[in-house]
Length: 212
Image (cartoon, rainbow, N blue to C red; front, side, top):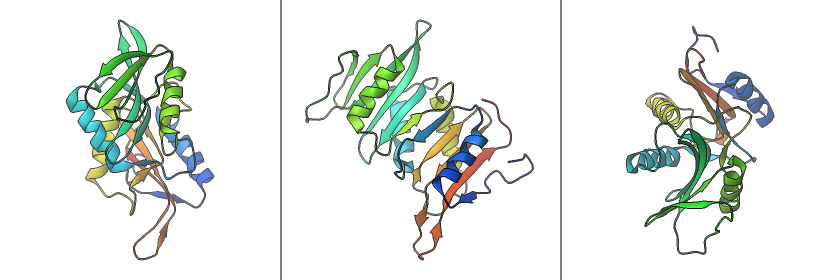
């Protein structure tokens, strides 16, 4: 998408494979989050609300990188990367509920609050594995096909920017997104609208230049 074009002009696709191919071309080397199955993806408004809440409570910090996320109406699970003493650690954050919890054998407990349990891992894939065991992965967003995961500060900024302008009709789930300093792109799954019209896979890009 050129700098002269409308940054909110949507591109629509019939097939998921075509939409994902266009999304990956547009993302380039920028950090991205992608739904790993054929589900609609992550509930968009739940994600923003959860990110706002976790930021306000201090569970997430602006410089953290988001490696995996799963959000529902009243709960959420995430894996973040945080620098501690100059080294990256991977922190799993999930709901503390009455049901039996799956305790990872290679994770260190770091958060034990009224509604949140957190474990810290030295290896990314161990944290992701515990995330997938906990959520079963359906509708989750995971950082894939890029050298780094997106920064939470960029995610929060561009989601807020997205909501300030027109969003594709019926776009209440996010199937994939990439985030950079000066731009971001969002892929929404198809939907049948109230007047029975159908919208295909829709890609929207914000910003006018790419800087990962």
